[in-house]
View: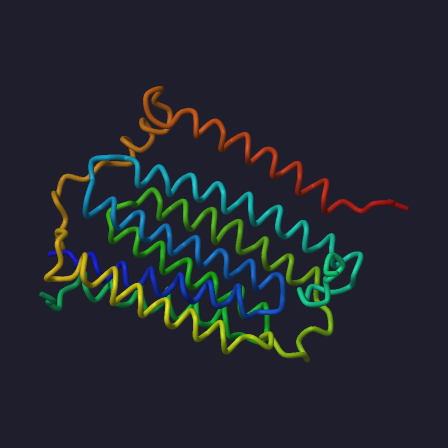
Length: 103
Length: 176
């Protein structure tokens, strides 16, 4: 007897909202990236849960999660490179200090 | 509807790890602690993948997220340490963000998850079948010409581009 589907969905929704709150409220750029990772993981939970409960013989759910892994790795690598580059020139990773493009 | 057995207990443990780790990520003052909480949270998600009979994804979760991304983030935290820890960790609109995200969570649960997928909802609450595709099926699907071979190749191209881009962006402009 498996846990009902809505429990996974509630956990995923809570994790997504936590991650989105981290993205919106934190001031440190690295912490914002961690919030993005949490949101991606919430989406992954949703995809795998729907795959298992609604279409366990169709590989779309698992394949999409595998692609999200790839996107997350690429995003983390480029994002952290940008953060380190900005830190080198501005001596800060606080996003409010990086306002060069703000008029 | 809900019975106490080994699986629901395991689900509860991994859910608490996931959400507790997530809360730790958002609320830790020290960024290193945030990164360690992130590892806890990612481990919980990997446990949920095991419960959902996706063992390959759970292994990849541990290898890629915990083994690579979390370590990358810890490196970035160490490379950018400054006087940031003495200042506030949240911006001035944090209470507004908390309000919006709390409302969004309540809305998601009340308006989407419970009516559609709850016990009285229109969609099946239990798995449609106990036959589950295996890791072998996933591997075949990823290289099958009729399924995901093109996205698979594009993903590898994207990874190469991201790697080269990261090196170019993070490289020192004028090496002495």
